[in-house]
Amino acid sequence: MGELTNSFEYGLNASAKKFDGIHKYIRITDIDDSSRKFNSDSITSPDIDFSSADNYELKQNDLLFARTGASVGKSYIYTESDGLVYYAGFLIRVRIKPEFDSNFVFQNTFTSTYENFIRITSQRSGQPGVNAKEHASFEINIPSLEEQQMIGSLFKQLDNLTAQNGRKIDLLKQLKQAYLQQIFSQELRFAGFSDDWEEREFGEMYKKVNEKNDLSFTSEQIISVANMYFKIDSAARSNNDYMKTYNVFRVGDIAFEGNRSKHFSYGRFVENTIGDGIVSHVFDVFRPIVDYDKFYWKYAIHNEYIMGRVLMKATTSSTMMTNLVSKDFLKRSILVPYVPEQQKIGRFFQQLDDLISLHQKKLALLKKQKQAYLQKLFI
Image 1 (cartoon, one colour):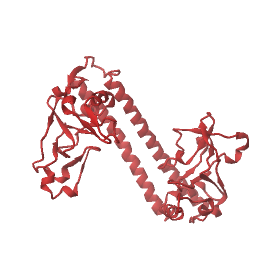
Image 2 (cartoon, rainbow, N blue to C red; image 1 turned 30 degrees about the vertical axis):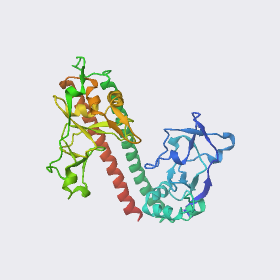
Image 3 (cartoon, rainbow, N blue to C red; image 1 turned 60 degrees about the vertical axis):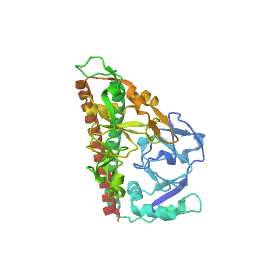
Image 4 (cartoon, rainbow, N blue to C red; image 1 turned 90 degrees about the horizontal axis):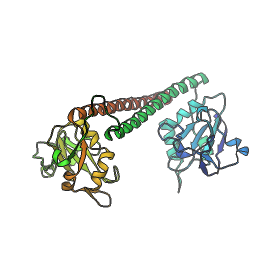
């Protein structure tokens, strides 16, 4: 790499301050781990005198490399659309000579060859690191400039498509959160529905069940409550006594997960919409006793706006887990729409989730395509 560059320069030894609206400061943590884009969610400015900092201002196609820490080797390529950016001291700036394509060099940092180079070179007795001299020793196979530009352009288009899909997913998730707040607070109603929601105790709608597995369900039908999918527990496969301890978890049932470290501070409910199965005996399972729309309850029962106050008064806490007091929970009340409005709300959010899932699959496919092209074009 040293033969391809005009310079290797270390960044500013300056602290960050509140963003002044003009001067941006990029640090290792501001480079997104996946996309390698400048993540400006927590944008700052360097606390410096800008009249003498021209050398730390990034120019078009400058490359940055993280030189220390857990993210050592992480790379970034500057584009003018990122604005006026200065780079921090734990980053190395590389300026590629005009007879080479910067984006081609940048894309080499996504290869397994580069990952192996960083893994081996960064080994230190203390904090892992790769300095400028060591980065300069990284070997790259270089085709003609025209082919470099073709390859760099291909990957840039793939990266742009990936970033666009990522932004769509983020926007759809934000939209979903806004609708969850507005619809379940009745601030927003669907046309044709104006009846007041009815106050109902959970005990009028659900009952706690202790239906144990009679070995009708196998280890392939164990449901992960945390992520709602069927998992295979090889340890339970041939242990009938262990399998009998599982609770039956049918479509429409809700289960309480009390892991405070992953979800709401008081735990959460999850509804089964994927198929009949079984769950560990540590989960309380409740079964509906009235007509309902399962997709409405999927979103209602996991809505912090609705369930926060209910569960705070119906749970007891330990260090990491929250335990549900079922009798207290069943006495708690919430406002519930009539079934036709439940169906309208449930379908709306399910369609929104389907759209998010579609874009997530497209994003995964784009990432897979890039990895395949990296393998074929660079190695």
